[in-house]
Image 1 (tube, rainbow, N blue to C red):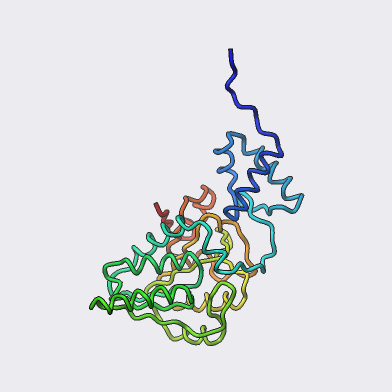
Image 2: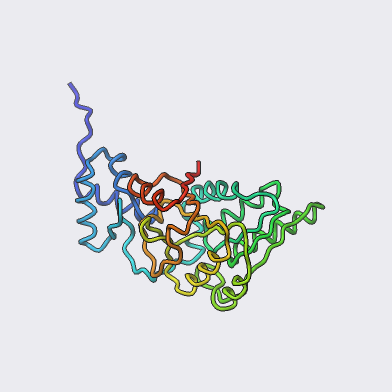
Length: 273
């Protein structure tokens, strides 16, 4: 009689699997590894502990993320290639909140770029007023507005703040914050380098944090657009506490502890599908 039961993975193989997920996605959840490998939570946590001791990952609530300084800011070209399908889903879900004739603001980031792209597909795109400090988002919106005019359709009002350019293609500094200080909009869509349900949204760039705070102050309804690889990732500075967010849009339902913390702070969770 042949035994078709697969041999259990060695610790080294499990740890390499965890590292592969962290490398591809920026982080991994314990539950994700448990489900994929059919092993216990205790085993996964033990493997993560070993990887932490080797300096290969950092432990976060519910899993692990890539090891690295909180001041490390990836370039936009790098971020934009990661988790594209998840970001597109998040962008579509977030854009569905926007009503005809609304005014809104977009922070910089690859996920907020996906929101900008989704806005261009709305039937009422031409009635919107959109403010952003993101160079890629502004280009996308300007091009779509020009295309609408060429077709004889109404075009949105698109405003790009001034400021100094960061590695993530954000415009930051006094020019950006001054431009935002006197504005009020219905929505702001905020991306983040990382987030923690107990801390909030974080960035490794201090100047970008200040600009994001100005965006937050300008909005009636703040919306976080964060894919699941950012959960538990830390940045140098928090720019938005979680209780300041009205809607949290992501691609996977957070774990039960995170959901409880978010709901206790009055945050509505929207899982893009």
